[in-house]
Length: 255
Ligand code: IP8
Image (cartoon, rainbow, N blue to C red):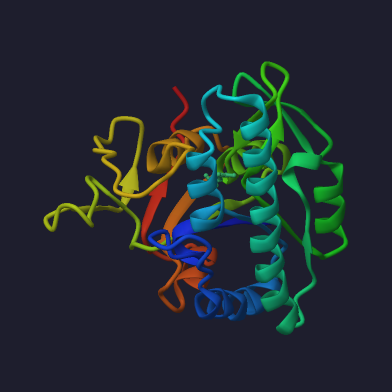
């Protein structure tokens, strides 16, 4: 079984609010259709230009006016539902049995971490050969009204629960670089990452869940190899699934 993250920067244009990259998602669906014949797959997608700008403009990570905040939470959640529906429609057009689930109906947070979950349905769907689809979302929290649950946190949780053979993150660059390649032309692609790898996490896009830094921290919590590959490159998914050298890989080092 494989867990695959459709990164927000791959499936949406992070520079323009609510811009869905249908043709990229279509290409990914075609690639997944060939993998699905021999592997169970769970999908999680990021918020991209649907969730992050709303969560940022309503300041959902900080405490503000309750009524305004509440509207921001509802708008962000509904934007994520719309993004999931567009992804699902494309997968269905390739006869893939995708099954969208709402993360906020499954997970409750406490101090930003998953504290309670009703996740049996995910394993059940996988056993019955569906492709469950989850996404980063707003979620009820025990320590405050509502908090942000990132797709990367969901994946770290599911990886420990479902023990996949690997996790694959689709990005809009070739993997993890030692510094942001869109800011530094001499940035170096890192093929293998461990706890001691030095990475400069300077960001240039709105990301309320901590961007690449959060991704790598979550990757170290997963009990399996974690691949970071370019979701725009045809054939990269198949290579990662077959364990061929592609992108960057994080291998958990037990200390
Ligand atoms: O894009 C963030 O999920 P991510 C979720 O996976 C929201 O970090 C609602 C901003």
